Length: 298
Image (cartoon, rainbow, N blue to C red; front, side):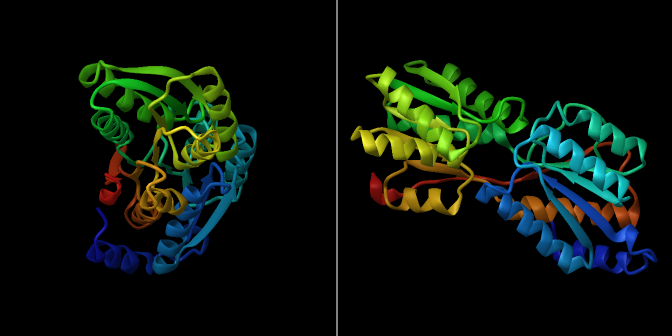
């Protein structure tokens, strides 16, 4: 985990870098139409400013082809280190390999990459977060009930891992809970609303919803509140809107990641590469998370 002493040491080493280009980092973000990734970018920018680095940020707008083009452009511009938050963990592999071939170290943040060589992988423990959400729902339902799972973008490591942690916990520890519907809403609030509206029509009995991120959870919550039904909603990311909904007792819980810290850790790792070279093997850095609930709602 980042320390002030380590940051100071990296900053001192960066003063020795003679080329401005050698101090430029590229950051390819999956989408900035999501508060979580805006926070990630802002945390990255703050750390870059602190360390005197130039940060070039691109927004893929959840498009694989756009992200591949963005990465190709950053490689052509000769960034010293490339940080990628993938739209699709498999589809970006050729772009990662192109950066590898160009001798540019690559860092994956929040979501993994299914191939190529990574210097660092910086993420929350999504499996543990999914399990934490499952445990909360199981406890609130006293081990019995019908649950809906809203999945994230297919192909992303975050969606796979959150779903894995959630479903493994339910199967192993809460067999009385049944997943009555499981559909993707692509980490998007509007899709969460429309998908949940359809599920509410099709499923007369639902006790809880687990959404792989808060945007989908908030969309689902809007549909549920419009229906007048009483359904527990749990999200993931602890965005400001979701935490407010939890404090208002409208949502049951959200798993709190620290997106600004993810971005800061990624830039600090990039700075370490610039100062000291890339590690021989991929270094995994886990950023902690917690479950945000409201005791007064009990």
